[in-house]
Length: 506
Image (cartoon, rainbow, N blue to C red; front, side, top):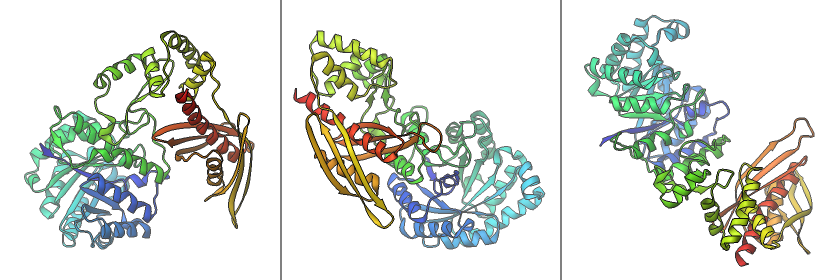
C-alpha cells in the first residue's frame, strides 16, 4: 500500500479557531499525545505572530524527537528567520512558507502582480532552503488560482529547493471531482513534480474537507494536512480521525496506509476538547458520544445479534470501550431485555412484559431512558423499594484567602450521613464531602453547567457523569445556586449506583 503522511496542524491552524488559543504548556501536552498517536509531522505554530507562538515551537522542537516539527511563515525573510530559529533544535525540522496565488488574493490582499508573487515565492524557498533541509511551500488559495500560474509556480519552487508542495483549499471552495482533476493536472503538467512530495490542506466550509482530501489522495497526493476534531479557521479543517478511519475501514476502495495508532484517536480527541473547552458534538463521526450508540429497536436487535449489521468498525479500534445501547422510544424489547441483563436484573416472562409496557410509556415522555428509570420501573412493578439518596443540607466556606470547605448532610431513608471536606475549589469540596458521607469512591468524567432561564436569577442546570467500578452514572441538578445544583447532580448520580447495587443484590 502507498504510505500517506499525516501532517497535523492542530497547534497552528487548529488553534486559529476563535476561542481555541493554547498556552505553551498546553501545546506541548497536545504535541506529546500527537507523537503517541503516530503523526508524521506536527506543525507547532506560526512563530512570527507572537512570542508565545515562538516559545511553543521552540519547546516542542526541543522535546518531541520522533516527529518532524514544522513552523509556518510568510514568504518574507523576517518570518523565515524566526521560523528557522524556533525549530532549530528539532530532530527533523521543517520550514513551511506560503504565499497567495489566486487573482482575488493577489489583487486585494497582496496588491501585487503575478510576476512579483512568482519571484517572492522562489526567493523565499531558496532562502529557507539555506536554513533548513526540509522546506514546504503552499500557494495559498490554490483552488481559486489559475491553473497555468499554479503549475508555473509549483515547478519554480521545486526547482528552488522545496521538498514538499502543499495545495491548499484555503476557503473550502472545491468539490471532490474538481479537486481530483486539479491534483491530476498538476502531476501531469509539472515536469519536476516527482522531486517533491505533494500535499493537500482542505478546509471544511462546505463540509467537504475529508472528501476532498480523499479525492486528492486518489489523484496522487501523499501528505494530508488535518487537525484533531477538525478544528481550525471558520468551519475548520479536514478531521484527522475521520480521514484516518476512512482509510482504515475502506482499504478495498482506498489502498493506502498511515502510521497512526487508531487506538489513541478517542483519547487524543478528548484531550484536545478538555484543553480548549470545545465540546465534541454527540453526533461527531468516530469520537462523538453517539458514534457507537444505538437506539432504534431494529438497530439494537441487529447489533446484539451480530455487531457488523450496523457497525462498520469496532469502538475498540478507535480507543473506546464498547458500543452503547441507548434506551428510548425507538428501542425494542430485545434492547430493553439486554439492558436488564447488563444491570443484573432477571425477570420472568410475565414481569418482563409488564415492565416493558411501563418502559414504553416513560420512553414516550423522555429523550433517553436511563438505568435509574429502569430501576424505578422494575421497583414499582415488582413492589421493590430501592434506596434514594437525598441532599438535605450543604454549607460552603470559600474565598480567595480561605481553603474551600464543604459540609453536607445526606439522607437515605431513615439513615443520615454528615461529613465535611476541603477541595481545590467549592465544587470539588462539595463532591469530596459527598463521597466521604456515603463512603463511595468515584471518578468524575464530565461536569457541565448551563443556564436554562435568562437573567441574573437564571436557573442553572448541572449535569455530571461519574464512573464507579467501570460503570458510568449520570446525574442532573437545577438551582439558582450553581453550587447547590452541582451537589444535587452528584447525589443524583450516586443514587443511580446505590439503586443498581440493591437491584443486583435482590
